[in-house]
Length: 379
Length: 252
Image 1 (spheres, rainbow over the protein chains, first blue to last red):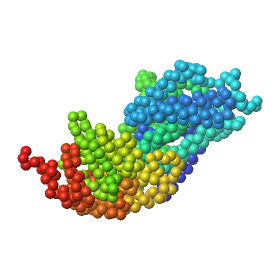
Image 2: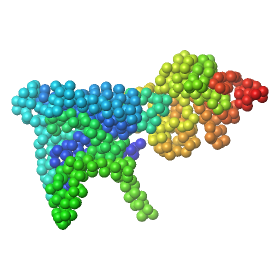
Image 3: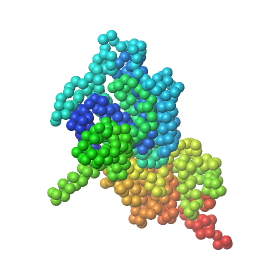
Image 4: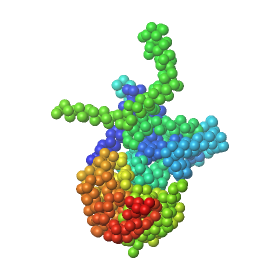
């Protein structure tokens, strides 16, 4: 038991290092700009929370984006009513997402398996449609909820900044722009604010999965019926896991609004719910590091591939004869830009088929293969 | 004193009368065997006790409390544990975790929320689990994943999961089926030891007559969904009704 505590501590330190050094590490890959870094952290939190439900208990929710959307709306409302300070916004977004997940979880958890997934999907689509239609006074419908000059902002001080901030510390400020290996890295306040919550989220999920409570959740995944014959009432455990992961989603939604103070209903759409499922499976469901890795992987490739347009492609294949160049551009074209989801789909298929444990599973078996070979060489 | 009183339990699956008016009385501290030919309704009866099946009518009174209408986890919390015939263990968890789960459920009740409690602080429950696993001969495999164990070890683990709860009533569904003679005798010793030292009442379903007559204080014979005889072991062997149930009547 001591060795697991030790390796957990090492894993946590490794994770903290990765997150804090993020802007420097990603600079050579062209990923060191605030918008992308913040997305890494936000979706990392979202995926870690989703993994507490899906990875530990095996219950696949297809409506988790609803909690993320609710968190974003709650945060923007706090900006409109109180001030640009991010703390009240985050607190309310977690509370609101928690309340929604209590109700949705209570009803959806009456069923398991595919029926549970369908119920959560139905609830999320309902919330999505309501946000677009009857709830327009709260959500501002298709335009999306944003901050206007005539909003009350009762607590907004006369000299406090007119952008999201933490007691005057502006979220969009880049405080250091050093060069790494010839690439610019941007160290941004908003990223480190999100990073703090990402590390906290990671630590909490680690504690949960190592606790007796987490063991019960893993037992649900393996054999829920047996657990009830063992004297455990499984539904409260499931609801607790559901609400915790819903609050994580709310936190992610709140952070998103803190970085960019607007909220739209499209954040609740089923494609957004599907994305977090992909992230978790891609990275390795049930592992601690996997979901964050999956989130980073998807957001990075989204940023890179969706930026490539035909002009970029022509410059890539410029060394070829004209005819061949056009053919190559035509072949690659559907996979980049707006069509980058095609690439994502292919990557997802490759990983699910060849690395059933996700990226983390792949890395672990690679590590085992290397150490295994190392031992053979010695012997 | 009867700790389990079963009265007029009926269960029908479509056109099949699986249990017809079953009456049974299990004395506290006794080992009570239920025997009978295949399809007599023995497993169905156990399933009615633990809430897996709900009888159409009748009552199951355990320790002054009617078990019918209670949820499976409430029945277990009342002090009834079942050892399943085909091991129903948590295959993805380790051997130790498999036994710690029922031990935690026994100590903490059906639900306890503390997501931050550290597993290594649960030394007390761990010690109890290790002790039971040592009794049953699995203490060398604590960190093994349950799915990678042999069939026999899985059955032993299943038994440990029941024993660790120190139930008032332990239901055993063919605990020695498929075991070698040596393992069977070992299991008989373990059960005898537990019955004597902890005074746990046991209801045991068994086909192996060697096991039945080594353990049972009382035997109920179930045939075609009803109890035809309930008597002490020495009176069962010669009973013509029992012979008829197993071999069929000579007149037919």
